[in-house]
Image (cartoon, rainbow, N blue to C red; front, side, top):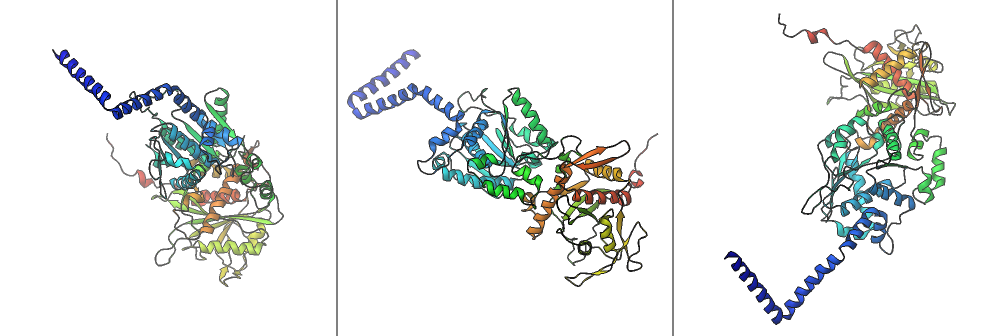
Length: 591
């Protein structure tokens, strides 16, 4: 009975529709048009599938397709290879110089992926969210300029703020930014691009970044399944080069092996000569002028332009990743901090000074390092922070250098009354040319610029007589002969234990700093980077009875390292305190 009713109802609808087809020509043409549209789509479905496959496989050709007839961005051969690798391999590691255009290509690859993989979520991570956001906004505007048709793929207006980005696409794809920091823990994206990956440490990567892409994308059809042929969990790395022996250097070596074993990974690299050949970035003359400039750091040029991983490959003084990990300080101190009454805070400082002759110039070259000591409640040293590094200009005589050292002493609360002095000691390398500086520090002097009396000092550990009797014993005249191995092991102990802390890069702290002097803050951050360069260039040299350090590249000095290691040796020798036994004087005991 029910079947008969259904048949009658359906037959009535068919009869009614048929009568309307006969009496309403417009309705007839509309039905036929819809039918033709469906038939056209079905007849060309294989072509649509082939086009999608082509667009996904050839991102560079797809960008050529949407490029305007006039203007637009012309992709060079190396850029095409780069884009294709980013689309075809489960992981790409690109080491490219400044001026290559890697960040622009990276964002082009991200936008291409967001368009052709519906509902995908993809992110770029950098050292800070602020850095990633500023990069993204600049490159987004360039993409919209060179490829105007891309605007049709956006779903609404993109959101760019100081520390966040959200670009939504009509496909459902979303692009955002993350930080290479613990704040990213728990975030989930389908794919991830890591900017300046050379600064990563493997512990942070494994704990925070690698799990970000654990959940694969599902298709948006009825099945909502995981496509087994899709490159889910893709992580790409883009950077300038870093240090040999670092976690990222070892990652590249492993990826090279996996590339040879056809495991879906690829490593790309180029020096400044490749983009220069295609006319991108600076000219050959400009770059070579930088290389030959005596003020240019050879390490910085090798990393930023030649894509060379620098430092000792075998027998390195220390695992450079641990020194990079020590860069946690966000507030440099250009002087001793004061309270609201302009009194010096009860901080504790030690100043290390190394006087050396540069390998390149005959002039004396001095490095001054200011260390701030942080103690716990038991008076044991918990941290030693490198809050400032100063390098006086070459060519200063010993008297001028001594004036500069005494100015630094005053700036950090140093006083001739040692009971209230915030600076505990000034450690000077008294070997060789350093003895000349020690002699000058033991003289009474007036600041020629301010007419301030800088005073006369005595030494802590020698019988050398100062010009003024009963001068305060401030200078520790370090004689490194015979104690080199102790100085080196002390430096290693402070780094390995995590007590030593360094300033973070300027790009990471410029938005958080509380000091208004941008130039001096940036200079201090640059000096910190040069310190790391020096340590990376040192190799541990062992003999039967002692250990020492030697430079891999002789033109890279080690003055900052020496000043730091001397100061740490003094701290370990005289200022370290054992934890109070009172810490364990409480508890419950049962018999």
